[in-house]
Amino acid sequence: MSDSFTAAIALAPEQRLVALQAQGLVIRVADERRRWQKAWDHFYARWENRLIERVLLSRIRKAFDHLDNPEALRAILVSLREDYARGNAATLSVTAGSASPLEAAEDVPLPAAWLGKEQRLERVLIYTAGGGFLLPPSQPQIQAAQRLGELCGTDTLINLHALSPEAPFPEPIDDTERLITWACERYGASNVVLAADTAGASISLGALLKMRDAGAELPAAIQLFSPWNDLSLSGWSYITKSATADSPFRMETAAFCARAYLGNVPASNPLASAVFAELHDLPALAIHTSRFDMHFDDALSLIQRISEGDGHGEIRYWDSPRHHLERFDSEAANASLKMASGFLRRHLDVRGVAP
Image (cartoon, rainbow, N blue to C red; front, side):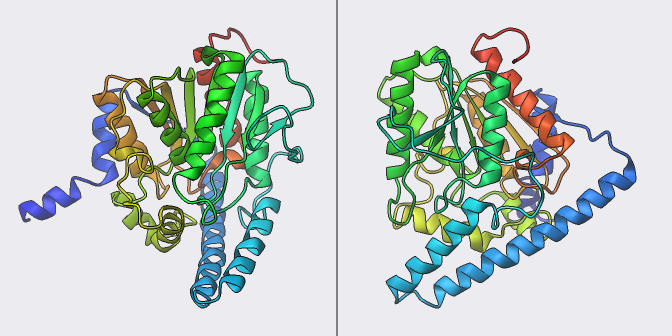
């Protein structure tokens, strides 16, 4: 076996995973269900992933057929956003109840929506949902954010940042930076926590990096779910999971979304891809993800870079084909949200169990 081949294999997430587990930075969450239950869930999840993949790829191919027709491209994007907001393009599985309808928060100077009728104005969670930078928060994502906020016992804001391609990089990051700054001024930085999923992780970390470099006060902690933080798609898991039914996404889908967001900006820009940034002096960070996720290598790289910068970072991962499993009505989703709320409440210095 050649040295170059050995070096390439060493980049595989499984090899890095062993090293990070030995350092206590990564913890596997055991699945206690019976074998037949796990087998059925894996089968159903893989079938669902394939169906979502086909739907997304068909939309992208349709867009490619109309690259010279801006009106047709706009109509395709509007249709996809409407489906996604209703949950039709996000998942086929049942979520845990219905989410609160999104209504713009009048008292917030930037696009955002409160989840919950009343605000206690003591502590706040800002949630940034992913959607490939192109799509608004879906009903399953809003429901997950609402459940997390209830468990944390905080006011909860959904970040409604501008979407690409109309608002490309770095506009969503700038929106998010201003929203976090407003929350830190109103609540006090130590009473602000963040959460984000998938592409929302890229936007949230980009905003934190800008705030850090400007010398601003930062929130107490950030929780990421299935984070996408390498828009160059350089991780090994992008290759392996694109070739299987383990993930509902493929490299073509990710590349399309990244290009629409970045335009001609290099994908290795640290504000877009935090795996290439200096990750020191940031809030405590926790990641929940799946070993089968296409972005799994992003999570490992983030934790490695944070550890090198003497920061606090940790990963909990599941052996599940579910991408962003917190959207689902399942024991694993409930366990993940409870663990995430425990992490955030600890850094908010809140004791006991949420009401």
